[in-house]
Length: 64
Image 1 (cartoon, helix red, strand yellow):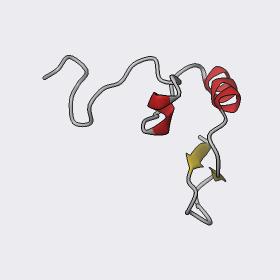
Image 2 (cartoon, one colour):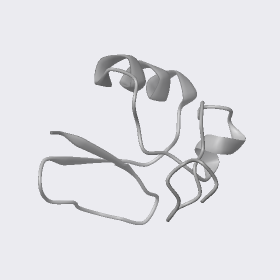
Image 3 (cartoon, helix red, strand yellow):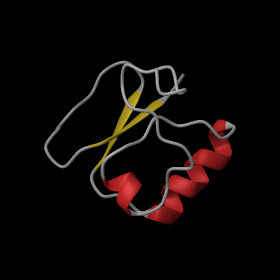
């Protein structure tokens, strides 16, 4: 499975990973469409309204 990492500081990534410098909402939406709809996102993606659902790390999504 190919991975995309958004980072302004990471210079290189291994294991079939592409490093992208800037978050472009249209590109993230296109990536979501290609991936079948599920992406692991947070941070700036939340601020830009690119996240449909958010679960706190360590929870199972029902608040437990």
